[in-house]
Length: 328
Image 1: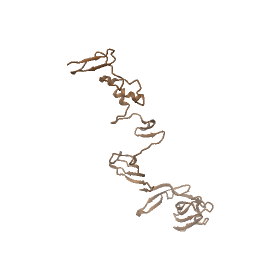
Image 2: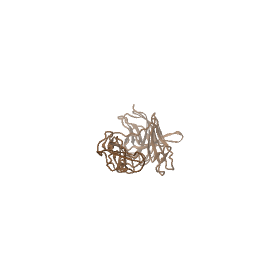
Image 3: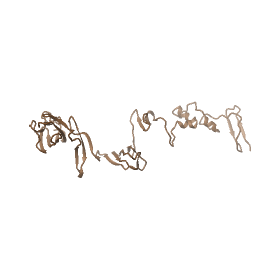
Image 4: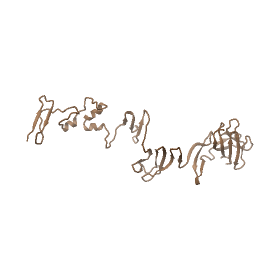
């Protein structure tokens, strides 16, 4: 067994080679290793690797000094600057190009995550489609609720279609049913009622909430959801409610008195013409100023639909308009 220790006389570089044998080799002179990371170290002790200080000089291969320096930090220090590929906890926001485009935990809500773009837009894109969900996530096979005690749902878009699906509280996996779809041609399929604030009572000072509902045997109905004694347009004795203004309506008008007698009537309107088609009793007329009647007519000056109370008692009216033509 023999060993040879070869040293440079100026002690700037030391090459250690073991010709034969094994075991520790004593070095009695300083061992200087190359600082340039592109050069082979030839030999390196664990203490050297674990305690090497940050590189002082910039490295052109990295965008910033800090990125280059990280290679020369201790393992614990270097790992703290990067997200572990196998998981870990990120402290602070994850920025992309600019600190204004980021993924982070909102400052005032540690239980949420926010994807933000201060400078422009945020996109969620996928070849097969995209999903936004509430109380549910996709595990690769099924949709699972986070909390099985709550309902869940998701909004999805794919190949030009838009859909919203929900499911009630219950055991996982979630079985969601489409409640609304809009296809690529603009056709909408809705499960349930279409509720608006002004589909009924057009132009009134107090719009009456309404909805479009599906009835048995394929019948579709426009439903006045606020048709009761506490809702509608109040009209005093000899007062007029001008339901619409301008030459902008031709079609059917259904009127309903909800405070006094509950009577209804159906009128046909076109320009200055008003025709009484049907009524439940004798409370209505289509001629302005008819005494003792609720008069539904067209204002000749503005072509607006008017409801006039000449019955001698204050009334409350609801109106539903079905327009067949926008203008005359």
